[in-house]
Length: 188
Image (tube, rainbow, N blue to C red):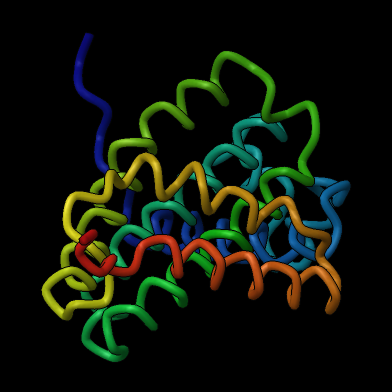
């Protein structure tokens, strides 16, 4: 089968714009229709459906796009924050993305969704590893912490309600986790 032709630059810009608008609209209302997303993106429904033929395809691509941006943000977050604050900032952003994902219901329980989650795991784990290495070099966390353990532990953050109280609880939970990462005094 011949290789697919690369998208024209205007088609790629449309796609990126639709993904950003879809992210924003779905964050506001997980039940938003594809037509409402097209309208807000100021594209015709045909343009949206050409890029994303189903609701599930759009939702999964929004998730993939968000995770890609998050993973790619590690160098910038580390450059603009002290390592431990970079870890906090990164996990706060990740939690916001996952909260959006969790609000999208049945679309994320398919084989395609499991495939997207599986493909994102090594990327996220590598990003967390880079953050932990920076924290370790700075003396903020003890050596040898497994990124997978940190991700599992931090998963409590995106289970808090999307309310001011939930945000406060997430902050408290993050600090409890970070306290557990800190270097321990030698046992005597």
